[in-house]
Length: 112
Length: 116
Image (cartoon, rainbow over all chains, first blue to last red; front, side):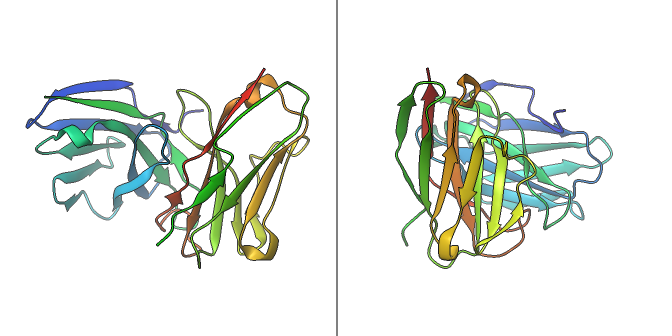
């Protein structure tokens, strides 16, 4: 039962353009969402988060949008840089004390 | 500040053998997590410790997996006996507070286990 889905296994974007990574979830009890970034042979690192009381959170080049009615969130990276090439994981939690449920990840490739 | 340390980085064993992984979390972090990440999937929580007590081990296959966190610092995860389907990357993470969902988790580099 995949409660968090990242339907695009990979995404290729030109350097300088916008990267949009998508994530869908099925559990309406989720109220906290996070994005992690992972380079090869390293563990995931936290990128940005959003709680269900908001619909947007911004941190520099990274913005996360949450659409609760559609059970969908997206991560926008503008502008995309070569160092952004990594696997991006979406994760969700049903309350602040509950375990994270992770998506399968999307591999982002930034082309020079 | 030193990050989360894990060893070994790679391990190859035969099925039915035993294996142990070690994790040293960031100093002062109360919560420690062990995740299993199978190729092509996201991390799956195996066990969560707060200090040296177990908070959640609902997805730990207890017939073959065991974990401990002595003195609320280092932790070891053991598999005995290993099966082919245990081939995965085992990630250790730690967080400062006690909120699994809301606190930022800091991950180690993982141990890649191959069971032949």
